[in-house]
Amino acid sequence: MSTPELVTKASQVMRAERQRMQTAAERAEAADLLPGIVLSDLVTAGPGTAGLETIRAKVSAGDRITPQEGLWLLTEAPLIALAELANLWRFRHNPDPRVTFVIDTNPNYTNFCDADCLFCAFYRKPGDKEDGYAYSIEELMAVIGRSVDLGATTVLLQGGLHDEIPFDYYLEVVREFNRRFPNVHPHLYSAPEIGKMREVSGLSYDDIMVALREAGLRTMPGGGAEILSDRVRMRLSPKKQSCREWIEIHKAAHRQGLRTTATMMYGHAEQPVDIIEHLECLRRVQDEAGGSRGDAGVGQVPAGAGFTAFIPWSYKPANTPFERQFPDEVGPSVYLRVLAVSRIYLDNIQHIQSSWFSEGKKAGQVALHFGTDDFGGTLIEENVLAEAAHHVKTTTEETIQLIRESGFTPARRGTPLYDVVETY
Ligand code: SF4
Image 1 (cartoon, rainbow, N blue to C red):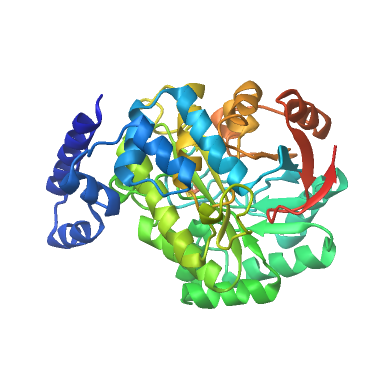
Image 2: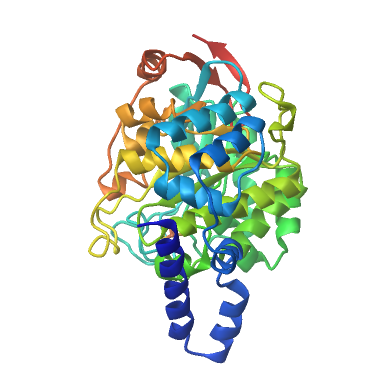
């Protein structure tokens, strides 16, 4: 579909979505949330005259591309040209031909959740006595300890949204984690969980961030973003927080000096314009946080603030309520396209992660030539995509080999702050 057709289709969907709103309150909220910052610009401005030579000149000069140009790249640019342009930004931000990875684990403290996201196979309804669990702090520390014994230096911990977990539990987890595992980095709680903390505590996002920081938290994962377009979120996870709330939580974290990652899960109900909307939201948040970009030229971009990295992955349909509507995975060529456009668009975020886990090892290797500079974690434990029948495993040795085979120098980082501790 051409760019003008995409814009026309996007505005039709937007109108239909507005008509679907039943109550005055819903319509008022929709007027505020829809069509979204980029969609509105695109519909007003039209597709423009984006083309490869214009965009190549801008990217070569370190200039910022527009949403229209991003949409053109995503939908019309030759794939191999995207790799070339993405690598300009990759080496501007990360001049060494080095690819980092981390030995990490992704346990969960509960699978009880009241958000009922249609893309999720992981959660269980509160009260499910058969498959549901909510760990005590002691049980959780035992789970974490098993991965630490296997060499994990970072623990990415997330859980479902459960009313029966008090705010003190979240703080105590951070304190106890730091007490028991002083040499391991806690990378805890995504934005939807912070939203639940607000519900159960009545505190503001800023107060929650202050409390978490005082307890010893320094970084937060970027889960729960899915697609930062409320039009899509209404279909995907209508009970979950809005795009604005996800953004406000990350801004609150950045204000308190916590670094966060940003994610995107695509390949379901979104259109290309929604992906650009997502990237634009992140770019604006990062500008506000003081993220550095390539004005200085190749190899001269200082370390930034706000988001440390952007990590996109594709929707895995198996065992999810959305499976009947969206039964197919979108595949590696879309992944490479999304990665490369993300690298070009997010000129103020230093790292873009390639995912051997979500897209497969071969696609992950190819992705290192599409602007990425990090190979993610070895994931000693992972439960969320495992519930969607997605099982891929690796080891530290294999990770090193995969990076080497791709033509890069493997380097192990200890934490999400990209501190290299060993080069191979
Ligand atoms: S994705 Fe997260 S918030 Fe949504 S249902 Fe699953 S566990 Fe709950």
